[in-house]
Length: 254
Image (tube, rainbow, N blue to C red; front, side, top):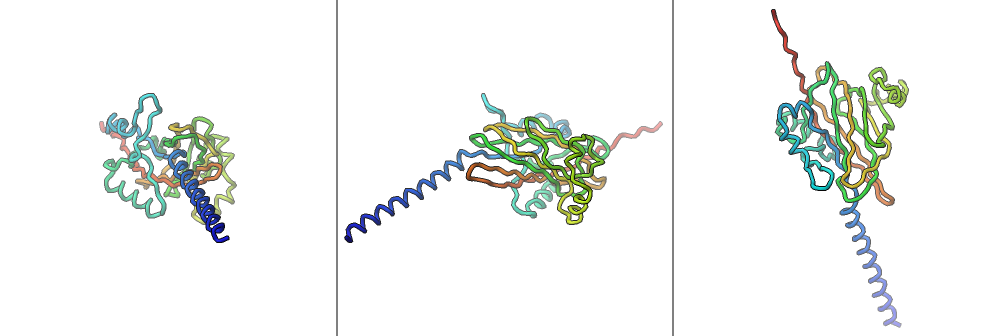
């Protein structure tokens, strides 16, 4: 009888070991083969004019017979706490274009600024994601949003009189809701998109037009990416500082 229980215990132990090894193997496989989403602001026209094609060549990695990829040091950086965002902004203010992820963008009009950012699936298989964007300066306002592929806007928070597109304007919550958010200082400008999908190595580009305060010298763009699978879900936050370049118009005297 004692021998039976010894054999039974050994079998149970072996089964337990197999279950643990299977779970560990599944986790490693998921980690290695799962989609991996990255996001970042594309170098601006101002940067291209002042720093040449070398910046774009450094930003992009052209892979033979494949989609191009982007160097992570130029993209938005992973953040976990509010102080991480402040640190990125301070670094950008002190070192400027010497920091690869710091973008310099000139105003397209008196107070309007255009940014384009890319979302890429750097993983090894197809994946679903949900994207939201906001800013550390609550005075920034959204003026326009352009997307490609099936990526569409789900929610939008800004002043309605700043938006020209009627479809986007309909997504803005009622004034009473906006005032409640502003009172709580939860949102300045905010935009979220419906669940999208990207093939491995695929990417989407989004264009935003912003209105920035006259005294704003820099701000941080904050990205939230939700990724989910059947039995797995994660939320990642990324941040990227932007330095505003205000080009003074030349004055001519008679």
